[in-house]
Figure 1 (cartoon, one colour):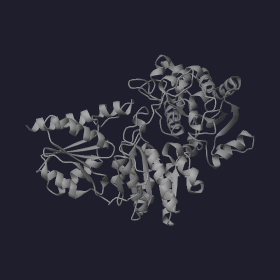
Figure 2 (cartoon, helix red, strand yellow):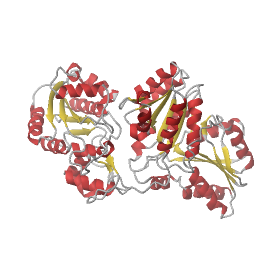
Figure 3 (cartoon, rainbow, N blue to C red):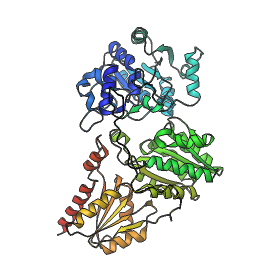
Figure 4 (cartoon, rainbow, N blue to C red):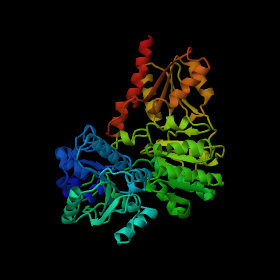
Length: 563
């Protein structure tokens, strides 16, 4: 099993550390319990590669995370052995309790088992679920996979509590929440696992029980000296030489540019502090922490706390930069509304992984942040198209004191020629004109600008003259630029790497209020109203119609329909 997981990771890359750590646990769970009649829920579920191999998907495991292949997380549509889709954190106990209650209503006798770990227990939703489950008589089994890590090493007081439990210091927090607590058990001792799980399965009684299982993340990995990221995920690699098959980058990533810019800002201003939620390396804040360890806070998988912590810092004159992936900031949305926007606090949001992100698929796509951030009162929302624009927008955010401000940027290499010394703030709400034509105006926001320019070049060769502008800001809009484009072109096309309801909605509203929709036709190119399946980013954007070919095709269709 372990060899199969490693071989699959060599071919496809992806999450393999968590799966390697639960090989024995996975085998034992499927041996003891009658899945899929007994429900087995994997929290986050990047640890579910062994589970997929055991449940009829071994022949497809080398397609995992590839277009048309297995999804990298559990997915209800993929197998009856996946009773709940989970690619975000801390949901398993809530879902499991719901299934257990439904079973009780139906008079069923099957078991419900939720496996939570890999940092997911730092998410507050897990405690909301345990608080509820501990007050009920419904039978629920929770397996705590204690491996001392999320992506980075685990942080916080809870990790210290788990360390105490491993040393036999009781009572436990879980008993205080109404759970019967068993363990800790060695998660790599198959005999101990089988005996303990069988005992839990057959034990009489009501109410929830938690089994504490201690595992080693990345157990059996082939790398002689892996850094901490290699315990979590890897690119494709040669299974013999163990050399990674990562293409050499031609340019720094947006994340790297952000991190370098933030370090430079912090050198100039000792009020700049940084916050992340269990993603120090993913957001670039590990680089910041090397320079300013006392000014960098990793709060664990706790985005709600991260946002309100930033709000508290802002009330006292600090300049907090909250760096969180777009898809994970969704967990902190109420706090962005209630604790930041309504109080007009100058919290700076650095929203990484905006747009489509590739093999992690729809659950990790940054599809919605334009909509949910730009609708908030007083929120400034920016989206850089290249490295220099990101540096300038970060400088703009640091300098901005009149309420909250956000910059959102994609995964991968930053376009353009980077200028590390660039730190001039932008004028709030002002875009830029990059190319002038007479037939069509293309108004792009963020990471699709390169595709828009390529589409304009292709159309120019066909005799269609295209203006291309970079909006820079979703909110406030550059109304002068937008009105000019509408007045001087027969067709205005907006382009954004977000769902409908974002940038284009704000543009259309403004044009309607100025009675300009009668002067020009408008087409809004957004992500389609459906999840985009996993694949490479290029494949995903082609699927969404937001690559150069798709943008050009949409313009041709619009012109043809009016001919």
